[in-house]
Image (cartoon, rainbow, N blue to C red; front, side):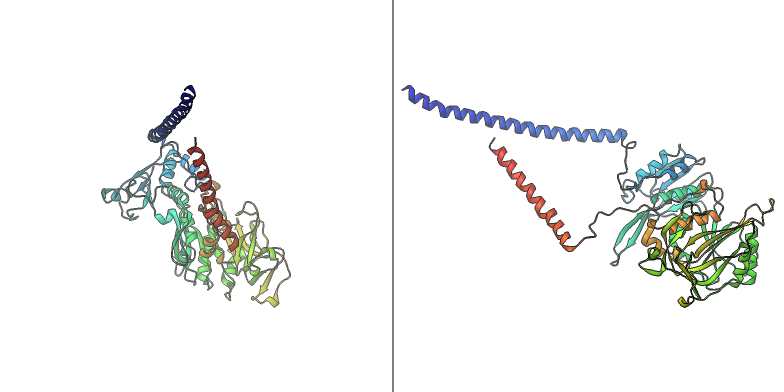
Length: 502
C-alpha cells in the first residue's frame, strides 16, 4: 500500500516543479519586457531633457574632415570682428530641410564671434519687408531659399546661394552628385567682404581674343569672390588711365599682342605700383610690344614650347603635360614638386640685364630634363635643363616714397590650362594649381598674410566599392548578403532552442 503512494507522489512532484519553472519563466519574461520598456522610456525622456537643456551647446560634426565645421582661419577672422554682421536665411528653418546640416555650422560662427555675429531665419513670403531691410538699394536681389550676409555698419551685403555652399556635379547620365562642400569658404569670404573697408578688384582684360574667364575660369572666379576680391573685366582699347581700384590686371591667354598705346597704358600703371599677371599658352602668337614693356622687369615671353624629358615629371607619360615643380619663392613658401599640372606650356626667359632694384624669381619650372623647342619644333630643341614655365619680377626702381610707395610687380605664366575649370574640377585640392593662382594674386595685390583667406572646398568621402576584380566583388557580395546573414540566423536558432528548454 505504501509502495503505491510513493509511486503517485513522483508525478505530482514533477508537475509541481514544472509549474514552478513555468511561473519563473513568466516572471522573468514579464521582468524582461518591463525592464526593456522602462529603459526605452527613460532613454527617450533623458534624450528630450538633455537636448532641450544642452542640445544647442553640445553638438559634434562627425563627418570626415569636419565638412560642416569651421577651421582656424575662420575662427581667427570671427574673433577679430569689430563690426556687427548678420547671416540671414531667407526660408523657414523648421520647414526647409536642405540646409539642416549647415545650421549647426552657422551656430558655431555665432559662438566664435564674441557676440558680433548673429544668425536668423525669415521666410520672405511671410515677411517681405526683410528684403528691403537688407537690400535697400535693390542691388543684391536675394531670393527665397538663399542666405544673405549683411553688415548694418558698412551697408554691404552678399548673397550665398545653395550652389555657393554645395559643389554639385553631374555624371554622364546628368544625374547630380555632391562633389564638395564650400560652405565655410563662402560664408567666411562673405563676412570678410561685408566688413572690409576696401575690396581689391582683379580686372581681366578683353579685346585681344582672351579666353572668356567667366566660363573657362569659373572656379578661379569663385575662389576670388569667396576670398574678398571683386572680379571685373576691362577693355583696354581707348582707355586713358587704369581704374584706381585695380589691384591686379590679368591678361588670360590673349591671341593678339597689345598695341603701342596699350603698352604705354600698362607701363604707366605698373610704374605707379600696379601689378600684371600675363598668362599664355604655346601658339603662333608673338608679343614684341609686351616684351618691350618687360625689359624693365628683366623677363621675356619666348616663342618656345616646353617638353618634359623626365618620365617621373610627366602626366600619363605625355611629354607635353607636365607635373611641374614650384620652387620656394615669394608666392610658394615651400617647394612643391610634381603637384602642379601644366599642359602646352610656353617658355618664359630671364634676361641678363640684371639691376639691383629688379628681382626675378622662378615660380614654376620643369625638371632638370626639360627642353625648349624653338617654334614648337622637336628637332630644334635646347639642351636638357631646367626650363621656366612661370616667373615673377618685382621692380622697386619706380618708388619715390611720396607718390609711389609700392614696387611694380609682373608675373608671367606659360600655360592657361593650368587654371582652367577642367583641371580644377577634376583634381580639386589634390593639386597645387588653385593654390598657386590664389597666392600669386595675393602677392600681386600686395595683401599681407593677415589678409590671407584661402579656404579649400571640403571633399565628401565616398564609401562605395569602386575598385577590385569582378571575382572579388562577387565574393564580397556573397559574404555580405548570404554568409553573414546565415551565420546570424543559425546563431539565433541555437540560442532559441537553448532558451526553450530552460
